[in-house]
Amino acid sequence: MVCVQLTKDSVGICLPDINLLNSTYITIPYPNQTKTYLVNGVATDGYFSLDYTRKQLSSVFLTQGVYSRTNRFDGNGFTILTVDDLLTSKQKPKGIWLNIQHDAFYAEHKLSMRSFVISASKRIVFSHISSPEVNFLRGISSRFNPKTTKLVFRFMAKNDVDPSTIRLMNLF
Image 1 (cartoon, helix red, strand yellow):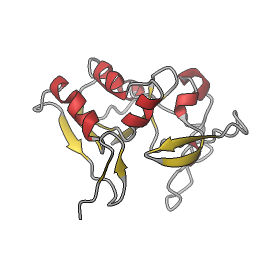
Image 2 (cartoon, rainbow, N blue to C red; image 1 turned 90 degrees about the vertical axis):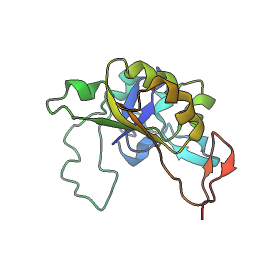
Image 3 (cartoon, helix red, strand yellow; image 1 turned 180 degrees about the vertical axis):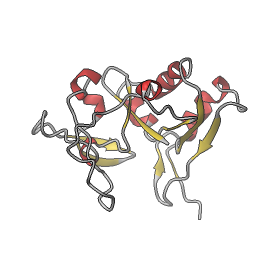
Image 4 (cartoon, rainbow, N blue to C red; image 1 turned 135 degrees about the horizontal axis):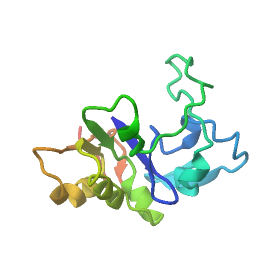
């Protein structure tokens, strides 16, 4: 599964979290540039891809964001991949599953995850596209063949708010 974030110039990059502090060494090339944004209704401090172009992020290296895993890959100079980079990698995945977590956030900042996904789908066949945002999935559903690409609703935590519908996801 590939979690997608958007850059200032609408490039889809592969990062597990909207806050770049959680998976990169962004503070080395860009010290003291934290910002605060509302993410799903919660004020969040950090570094965000929408503040940088793809070119600016090309000098940012990845770090292990899950601290219970080994750190043996930290400091090896791995850079942020774009979704298109997956096609040019030596080990091409058989099926690409995109996870779109923050469509409404990007839309608030005049970036369109929907446009990115539809444009990328002209170059890449996605096996699955998941999101916890109902309106995002509804907005792209007519553009994908269900035999080729499965759209998957991802359940949120019990008290999280779906920003695309402004309703509490109280399922239990």
